[in-house]
Length: 157
Image (cartoon, rainbow, N blue to C red):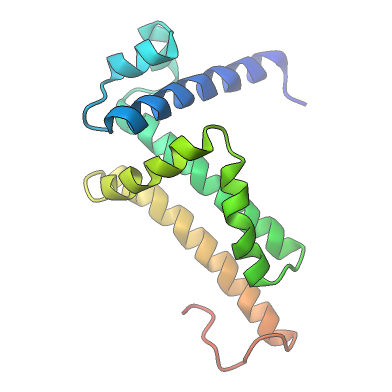
């Protein structure tokens, strides 16, 4: 169980990310400043900078959190031995259930474009995607072993 202080810190972080997502969705990453995010969050600059040193860190956190939802869903589905099509079919519903789902899904296009400009974001998202692909590859290998998938398939493909 989270301690009250930990819960408060998590809620404040979520407040900042929600405010940033709102501004980014409305004005785009490059037209939104840290001052805009601070104003949208209704916090002092010190409160926001306690959690994030830059706008790029906020963008990275939004993207990483969304990828975490996907990774968790894939891992849970695989742990429960769900078929891969069922796991894939469940992802849109899971994404729709996250805070500000519509806003954050619209931000996904901006995030993937930002990967071309931001090496740190590219590294974090690349690691997240690689983790998901490795997990899926392991599941396909297991399905081959269990006789539920064609043994001629290359799981890494």
